[in-house]
Length: 253
Image (cartoon, rainbow, N blue to C red; front, side):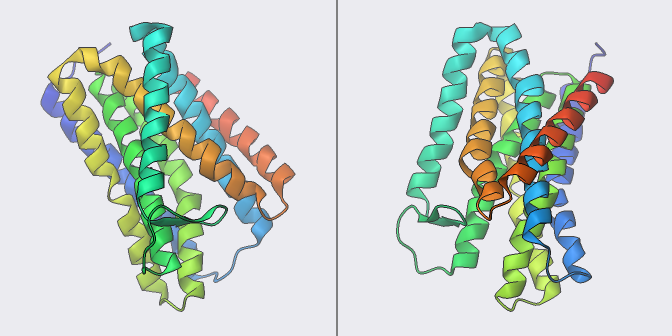
């Protein structure tokens, strides 16, 4: 494996996590031309995004964590990542289309609470990108960043459409959607910083990021893609996303 300096890893990792975050805004761009998307299509896209995330979690995060730290350490890290996102979900006011309002009560509008929810979920995604680059494997980091970017695009569309329904102007809807993705570079920097301090953090970081992403997929993305009666279509989308990400991981590693 080619050796990279710490400066190289930070620079490439930061750019990659920023690009993955900006993909959220890119996913909102279709609202310039189309003000409504069928529930069927949106659920298939969300299912595809969930499949991409599952494959990235398994092949690019969890498998390397087990190889580096063993199954027990990886299991603890996986559980810790999932528990952390659960606690953030519980104690931060936000809104999910499936579960409704969660966390402490708030006077913020439902749209803003939904944007907070997306922002919460974007942070561990950035962390996953940062930890992957921190391992010193640029190919693995780019694969994870690509996976995050792919899943952020339908997520961005799912955020922008409710903003339009709340009478936000098109450009404002795209702007606010893009902002939700800008938390990812912060997560990326944290992941890079932790791993750069000591490589002993690497298996923990990989497993933790895997647990956080797995929780988001299982608790939010899959239920959301099934809630409007197109669960079977969404499931095929998930399988397709998993296959695409599995092939990308196999080709570029």
